[in-house]
Image (cartoon, rainbow, N blue to C red; front, side, top):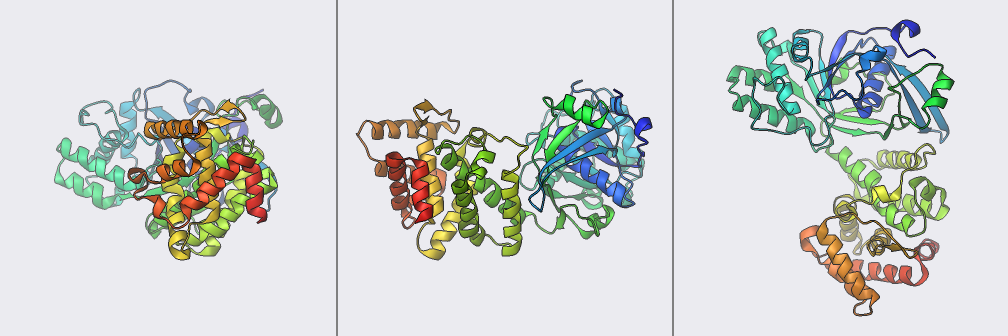
Length: 485
């Protein structure tokens, strides 16, 4: 079986217009996949030079396959049909190691065709290290490496304003473009690179904050042999991902024109502010996860897919989104509902086995950011806490008892939460305290919630009633009574 290569598949080589920091599965199944589609459907003609930002030889460089690899996109489409789409990605021209080929890395700064910089160096990647030196080859952090590259470009083109770039980080931090720009300016000051270079960085370049959304399940190690047999070639860089994708970029209309987005069906949005889209994702996608996990797990279910196959749990999630989450958000209702429908389809994806316990990490902290804002909005508008969120919170408290059917649950959260629940559940189980007292003490944690949640109308009472019902009849029976009632 032949290895994937350009000669065999007559893959076109595109002009290098993208510098990409990061060779991982996510960028290859997200950014490079979208660029490949745009290359085929428009005259974008954007090839990618990937920079490996860490000092490692594993995995091997994509150059072993001439930059080619296969994406396998699987899930439920807009018509609720299961699909599997394979695509040979030819947008990557080369991959180089900044540690082994630093001079070649800086030489790319002289290429007048480069217009875009994308990155995903993990959440810890956009960082500042005062020990970095301009003479390091390379400096330790991604922003420091990029500062050196930008300085080389500034010198190569004598500070020409039209040689600035669209800089588009994909790291999962708030306003990642603003943060990256801030740290680059710190390095400019630390290294005394001059006011003229500083002006060029800040005026000729456009730093775009982003929101990225796609589950990339990575290299299909267990399925590789069967997939290669089906495709007819060997591909050591094959990557799998879900069908859904969303790329929200805070940037100017000029970026949409540069990417040739007009008339394209890709889910790329160029917006003035990513904030409402971030709120939508956190509240609907992440909020649904956080609400679903304890209810489903304490009902005896282990994965997201199994939960969505259960008619009762599926109804719970859909009702919580439509009745309690969407009404509390600021975007247009139709747009929010369309996103919620897509989320439900993603949860039903038969190709992904998403364990509930893996989503359950740090659930109390997640509750504060993902569900509490909508709970408080509902309470303020309606004069009482929403019922389904109250039910989910009760299930969360039961989950932190650490037991399901007599078996221990691995709990992972901030130590102060683990200590509180250990103490309070021991008191309840020994008869020294009550469920109502446990609820009251959890809700009173003002440092965690920003306020005493006992003051939210009907919240403590509803949570206590639901928790008592779960302890008496079980979570599934309590949910059935709530939904039927």
